[in-house]
Length: 221
Image 1: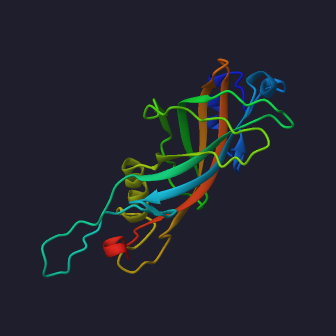
Image 2: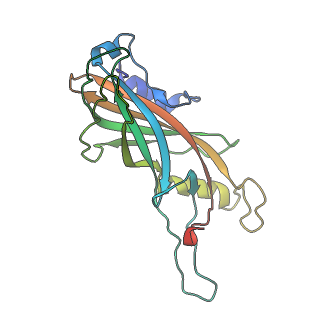
């Protein structure tokens, strides 16, 4: 679990920290916060998906799937999403079932790994599609967590930023020859906020990475 001292303090962390913590796991909490909240709230896994396929390759360009002598056939193109698995575990060595956790919002922010890459706008999402809450895991039992789909990963707006960086006049990649920096890599960070049945605010952090360029998604290729 991760009880929060101040959401504003964490917002400053998300916006201004240049090298955030990397790796899946729990967010910040008071030393005795987990005892008060009654559970451990964790982000277990992030699975990027695009048109229901698991992939961390983010396509930044809307291509044409038609041959030269055919009418235009736009390539499938949309926001890139993720399936995110969250768990609500009992405290260590506890025999008590944790309280349910109700999600309030989540933040997404990015760290470029390719030298000189463009900064991407952060995302804040509130009202997480009327989600009924993260059910608790039973003490001593298996805990696979609950998976939420259609979590924002890279939006079309952000793809436009990446496209301009790579392919606009003066960009880093020559689209005809493939010369230059033609693929970018980023870390992506999540922080989920919730409130449990006891009224305590909790959070869970996680991160993964992705690659961005003009991928061919015509006919599943």
